[in-house]
Length: 219
Ligand SMILES: *Cc1c(COP(=O)(O)O)cnc(C)c1O
Image 1 (cartoon, rainbow, N blue to C red):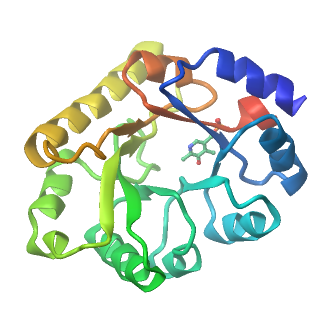
Image 2 (cartoon, protein in one colour):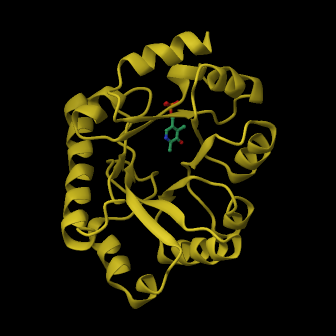
């Protein structure tokens, strides 16, 4: 069942787009089934749950922390997390840098932007991101690699609105790329699109889609 759904989703995604299987709340056996079908990128929104699952699954999995992240949780995953999607403050960047240094790594992160017309979603706006990237404090962080941006569109059936929000995130990406990351090829990811809207996201420039329920079933 999981393998069928996974293959269905894969067939709709161009090769250059990374499919992150969002496995939050699902048992390890479900992740193993997806792994056996070749899936290597998994997304979780809680650090504790990701840590527990990682310990029980093969070590060549790339773990993505996709949810809102509290500073005091960073240390638990600093040795292995592949990409942290939800970074929305300088304070969090400083803690990630500190823990990455301890772990002897450089940590890849995405800056999360607020693109939805809902006030329940976390994220920066362009000006806040620029304030961070311009700051002396940010320039002192040696163990952070900013790889791009992440966002969540409004939970609405209005496809035009969702497309507008994705386009806005693509615009933010391009603006930041031009201003801060021209010499940094690692800045290349636009993480947008979930089960209900990943095709629209891909049409609007997504490079990483985070798909949960369409693969693993409802939560
Ligand atoms: C849960 C979650 C997803 C996946 O949602 P589905 O609708 O199940 O595909 C994607 N991104 C984030 C940040 C999530 O928390």
